[in-house]
Length: 194
Image 1 (cartoon, rainbow, N blue to C red):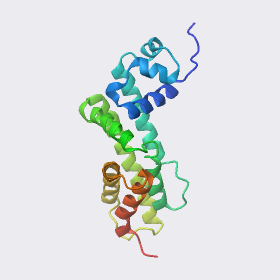
Image 2 (tube, helix red, strand yellow):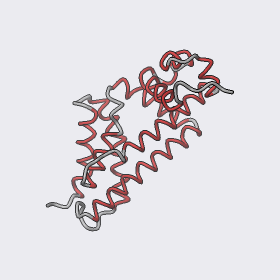
Image 3 (spheres, rainbow, N blue to C red):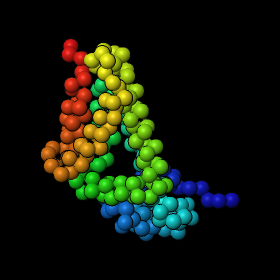
Image 4 (cartoon, rainbow, N blue to C red):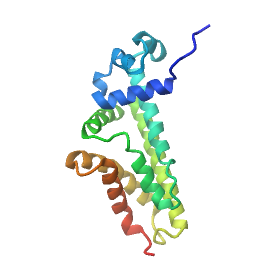
């Protein structure tokens, strides 16, 4: 009978993802991951196989957390939910150094087909959630009648991605504050004046 797991796979993957953002994916090793979570490297190899498999599993977990962030807003206004959700999606990436290592993970996501499948799944889900809330905002009278919600969702998603890089370059204020400002600016021309 196998021994019970004292640390869940989710906890291990959260720790590996945090490690990858802190040191970059190239410097993630089984030994470093094991030290991070308090398990042996052999246990991690047994659970995940290769370093690539471990990073892919952590990446999948990161995509799920990214997408789920857009559902965590408790704002009553659909437009506020769009902004809050995208701000919540960047909370873990709070320094330029973490952003640089996040971009290193993105390189894996763009270059490796298995990683890309997960990133594309996440990006489509993020855009769908943005679109869902923009549809609700249009129905609630927060957006101008006739707003092309699909085009605005794409613009907001693109603004989100660009805002992270812009903040890492300019380093003005916090990432959350910068993100809020950029998303608000993208939505502003479409708001119905009250």
